[in-house]
Image (tube, rainbow, N blue to C red; front, side, top):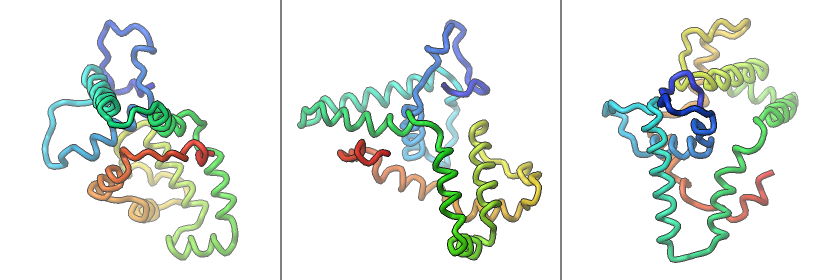
Length: 193
C-alpha cells in the first residue's frame, strides 16, 4: 500500500483495499515517469492526488493491454512470462537475507582490503551508510543529507563519497530504465531464485 503521509484520498474511499496499488504498478509508473518526463519543465499536477495516480496507473495498464491484443503473436504464455517478471520480485521478502549474505562474502580479508582501497571506507561504514540511505527512502522520496551525519563514527564526507560512488545522473537512469523496459526474459522464472 502507498504511504499515506502525502496522498490525498477522496473522502468516499472507505477501505484500504480501494487505496491499494501494487508495488509493480508503482514501479512501472515510476519508470515511465523517469523515461518520459522532462527535467526542465514544471508540471502543476502531482501524484499526491489519488485521482491522478490511479488514472496514470490505469492508462499504463490500458496501453499494455492494447499492445498485447494488437500483437501478431497470440500466446497466453507471453502474458504469463510478462506477469511473472513483473510480480515475482515484489512478492518475496525484503532483501535482508541478501544483505547478510553479501556482508559475509565481503568479510573476506582480501576482498575487504580491495573495497577499502577503492572506496576509502571500511566495510562496516559502507553497510551502515547503505542501510541508512535505504531506510531514508522508505519514508521520503528525496535524499536530504543535511541531517544524516548524526550517526556515530560516520562523517558527512564518507556519506558524500558513498553517494558519489553509487549514484548516477538522471540521463543515465533514463538510459538504464529504457534499455530493457519491455523485453521479456522467457527463462526468468527459472533463474529467479
